[in-house]
Image 1 (cartoon, rainbow, N blue to C red):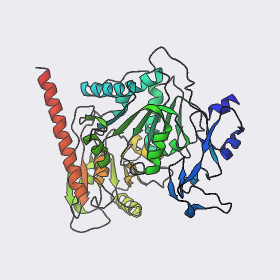
Image 2 (image 1 turned 135 degrees about the vertical axis):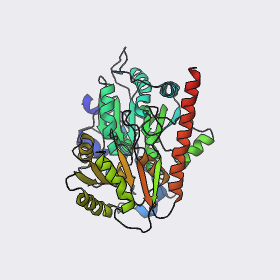
Image 3 (image 1 turned 180 degrees about the vertical axis):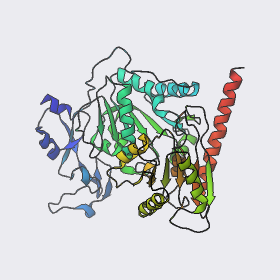
Image 4 (image 1 turned 30 degrees about the horizontal axis):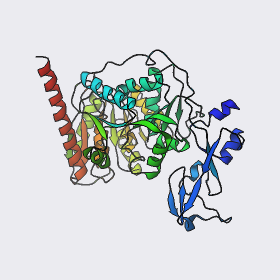
Length: 448
């Protein structure tokens, strides 16, 4: 029973969910609060934060339910949420838990120090670092401090693909720390661990659990502008806790918070290998065609000749197979596949590209972030489509040149009509490179 009760530490579950675990509702260790409350004619869900006029969600027994988090088990005004307060029941370590300290540049060390101080002071901070700057490695000192201090730590991200990239790296960095990976259909059962890596949706099951909460890719869909997920983040961490937000492309809200001095920020415009970001090449097309035109084909021919793996991004799932067929017709001996969020084999397909089994992928924006390939070029077809925002375009460009052995590459965006997003993405990368050049110049001056 004690082991079962540990599964509720820092969690929040409904009565039916407790019964499946074999936990009696009258256990003295359980804390309970109403699952859904009614106030001034409106319902308010205490799990996901949804609120609306109660009349819209009435049940035959005159109770009311929350429609927003039905996928997590129905909650009504007659039900309670049960939890056990987080007790930080973890082993105490006297030596560093970080297996091997990464080699950091002077600027990375400065950023890592600021993150560490933020955790020590139980504050919030945004790490705004360009793609490939080594954000995860800069986190390690802060994570090491928190874990040694017996704090419970969570790294949450909107994308499953990012979870799968992060988890093995963290397990390798902190092999002595018990950890778990949580997302829908992950294949792992929940266990009580000091370190949790999960999608932000999984935070709906936690309540005042974490001393340190790290939100990676904080600007990514579906977290950005989702009130339910923001509510989950707020309630998953303890009242006295620290929060670190990570991104290469902060949205307007985050920039506003920084400008108003409501959020501390650490900015790093230079990649770990000290090379600039590959800049965008824009290719204007005369006609909107769902195929590869001659002006863009020359880039692909060059990449294939030089045996450089590449991604071709398209704005619609319907374009995946036609573009793939065209590439297969052009190069019948090359292996390539298409991938989208609906593809159950997408992780394996990314692995095939990484290991050289495939030379290219035709993809939707599902691979805009959370994928690192040693050597890579990218092309975006119809980059003027509304789906391709400034953030998405900058993230896509950031897939290129991430490895120190291949720090450059080509980023090609095709378009028919110039858009604000295209201009802004190109401008943002130029500005970041100017700041990076200034950093390098200052570094050279300091060594004279």
